[in-house]
Picture 1: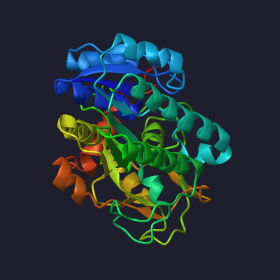
Picture 2: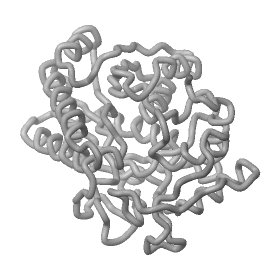
Picture 3: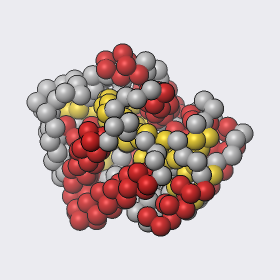
Amino acid sequence: MKVLVTGGTGYIGSHTCISLLENGYEVVVVDNLSNSKRTVLDKVEKITGKAVSFYEYDVGDEVKLRTVFREESIDAVIHFAGLKAVGESVAVPLRYYENNLISSIKLMKVMEEFAVKNLVFSSSATVYGNPASVPITEDFPLSTINPYGTTKLMIERIIGDYTAVNAGFNAVILRYFNPVGAHKSGELGEDPNGIPNNLVPYITQVAVGKHDAVKVFGGDYPTRDGTGVRDYIHVVDLAQGHVAALKLFKKSCGLKIYNLGTGTGYSVLEMIGAFSKTVGREIPYTITDRRPGDIAECYADCAKAQKELRWSAKKGLQEMCDDSWRWQKENPDGFA
């Protein structure tokens, strides 16, 4: 099976490319490199010993997308490409709506033109908004509190509406919780532009000396230590979830939706403490105001994925911390 991976040079996309190649899939990547680097695919090829076809295109460019589908015999698409920072989406919402929605619609139009009927969509736990309780199951009410989450929910609904009226079209929506970690080789990890929006790369960059202290956004949430609680999942486990999703396409599956997480929530301060043990010294932090668009607590119930995908997260918190630190320590300036 040949799989098109949009956003395949990104953090989750690149690790998924490795899992795909290791499981015998052919991989084609489309990425505009707006928040990633071409050298990522060199690392993917070095780790796997297998080649990746790469097109430096924007997914929102229908003409160039058609070129890819015309030149490659695509069997399935995994759609990662999109803007993904919660705080930034609050500041510049139109940019998020224009980029994430329009590019997804254009991708599906080109898939339709070339009769590609299998799609895995990279969604997010943000579609649950501020949940009334935890853990979260897939049938929880859906709502959003930031534009990033709203784009994910709107794309989910577009996919659902399309699947409902197109017999033979298969879509698997994967709602991620909080990906962390890195490839065990130390060759591949999370390398955000500028100051990280996500907690773990912020911690590792403080540990390596790039920043003075971790900014903890909010210390007065109704949680066990006042800081936000999240379900952190190793990126390699997450990547394996996409391989499991592709297996559903062996027969028609229609629309399927799954949470991908560990089912365990850790607070920001607990994560900083865990990393302090990995690094061997205290990670400094300061508590500041809450960040717009954040919620108090969010972690998954993954029983449905365990039952239907035969998938579950295997890597624990210590491995997440160790792998993240190995990557940052060996690559203090990221891929630069």
